[in-house]
Length: 425
Image (cartoon, rainbow, N blue to C red; front, side, top):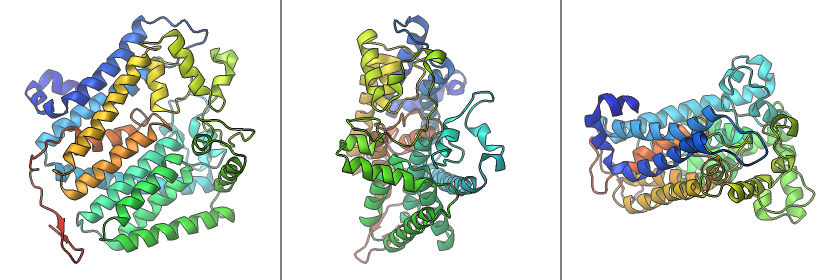
């Protein structure tokens, strides 16, 4: 991004189509960065990492800028195919890695923890999640892996529906590994959002519908059966599913059950999954009640009561954010939350306006990614999460942010269905 700004200024003009999203996110990142320098916390606990906070805020801005330049130098259809294949292959391999890890443990793959945190960072989220039978491969948090698996599923459907020539055995194997990987994470984003969106993408178009559906159902049933019999390493699906059943029977709110206790009202059913490091009061001064189910909502209220406009700055609080909106309030206050809301609204409105102008499968892929961005924002900071947010921003930039209504893609071919259901290009 800096190279474009300082050495290739003539390329800045190609970013004009996405200037609104760029301006909104730059304002959010600037608010968080300036706040870290000038806001003195009035709260009686320590702060989070400044470097991590700046990375979360600035990396999306850099990604959008770079992809905007790509989209004007290389035909978008070629970029989409390339990115889609990279995401599909990488996440299929990550699914295989997660399965292997459930059998051999982290000691069997000593390089794996290097992907999760810097050396000496203590116990990682991935290690704690593995204690509950959740495996995410190179991703530190299962929720982040869940979002990435969703994107991989959408990209594979897009590739198949646009007539990509690939061996049936290869794509079915990749499809199965993506589904298995998503199940290994036990991520609500994948199990609820990813499955529903993928089902809509598959069932509303004829090409490959039967094989995609049958292979998905068989993969889910076989994986669930092996897990129930204890033949899938230490995967912990049975315990988590048992908690969901108990929570529903106890009359817990739907939000409480679907979010595994993060939001809503619940009774005595404490979620069995501990998938994030919990700092002690002695280490950070953060009240322990903020780490309990529903505690992050109380934390947000505390921030708004003491720093209502601009939050705590990029340092934030020493806690894992379980929502885009919680993170925005903590690091940039109500101003930041409004800016992030504006970004989400602009993405949705741009897709609605562009969908009749984009090639059909690009429009469907764009809609899936935008809906995933909205839905996942309530369960994790999906636009700033490590790795998965970069994948999401790349796709959003190619499909929505820098697209212009009525503009014909270079190298693109018209796509439509004939009455027999064949894809005509």
